[in-house]
Amino acid sequence: MLPFNPVPKPSYRRRKPTSKMRGRIKPEVYKAALERSGGRCERCGKVGDLQAAHLIRRWKIEGETTVNDIAMLCGPSVNTGTCHNWIDYTKEGREWAEDFRRKLYERGGEVE
Image (cartoon, rainbow, N blue to C red; front, side, top):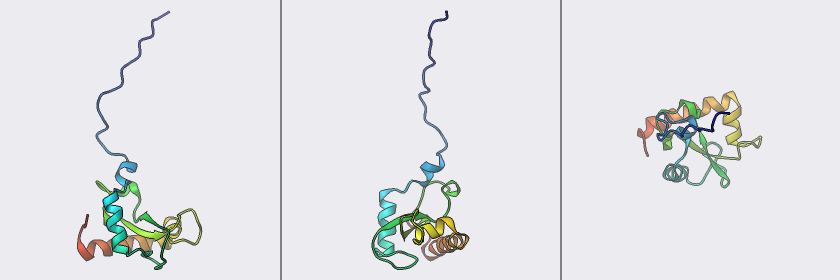
């Protein structure tokens, strides 16, 4: 029998961030988006139970998620009839999200 000789784990971290890492919403970005929305859904104007929704898919984000990459929408995304569900699961919703993101970038450039 050969002796057990495990290979040590590498000591370096991955160089390229995963889509989950790029899509992570930092607390300061969440707070800035909440202030921008005024506590209301940015699509329908409903107050309360807001969630930060990505306006584009995480794997398409270059670098880190900024305040212009998310919208505060009524949720949760798994409930039919909410704005978060609408932009995640319908073609019209995805088109609205792309248009809204474009308007955010045109309005004030990249705000962090």
